[in-house]
Length: 409
Image (cartoon, rainbow, N blue to C red; front, top):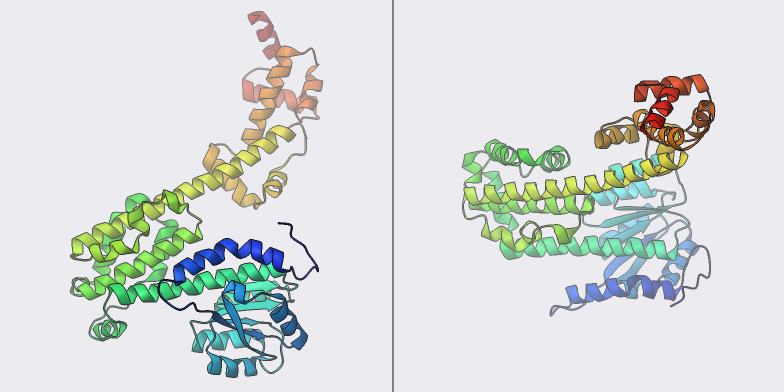
């Protein structure tokens, strides 16, 4: 089906149908299990009424599983609507009278933490982005927002909302009520799962440290706490979700992950006693870290391959630099230098010299070019510098190397 673009800022129904067909079918299947189909409520907030009208009319909200429940032209009115309509999503501009989008987002995050906040603004300034991240805004869109871009953002919002709803259902299905858990917390010194500690270990820990990490974690919780089945239920579920979020964030290939690490139905089976719970969590961490290392290796491998190919294509340029290669492959020079050394065992200059010397040896063996000409062809404009570099790398001068090759023939 052809995709007809009518304006720079919006794309009509052909794109909408194409982009969302599979997603919508998936969502119908997920939500239809005997329950009435629901639509997520959205409130649009912008100081320009025509912008709200354009967004509302150009997007096929129903096809995406949403409905526009209301709109406001400033943050104060938006808060009133939120209290009245209890929306799932708030899409807001930044620059507005009375209360801007950032302050509105702060209030929403504090008073209505379950609302998915999407910030849409024409102010492409890094400070706004940093403040948005600090506040906890879920998505940050820059104007002009294309129809396809907004569709993708709404799809992400729907996925996130659905996931949170599923978490709540699972907690109700597998575990005792939250009220009982909070009663338990009031009687203990347990403060809940330390998500930052778990996240840091997932990012920085090694596979060999998984057993020790779990043992130390349990020791820190205290035996009088982890002996409680109720606490183990909550803790195991919370760590399970930490791991799932981590695997999603690093874009791990879930089809390669053992089912036990991603199947929520395993959790009730492993909390019967403390040792079972420990072994399950140790394996959960091991699988997550192995996936992380595999993803990192693949990512590094691609960067290194691109860098090596670029070097082999441009080694004859005398001014070829680490900065040029880093810019070509899209990473910072310091990052490139670090991973290149880590993955190849050589720094950039050593590898470049190796490539140049390999080519110089081929030319010395197979051509009648003079030393200075060969030096120029491999990136050395100064014949004396080339001779010195060659002798340092090969243990003999270019002239002696050529003579030795002729004798062998």
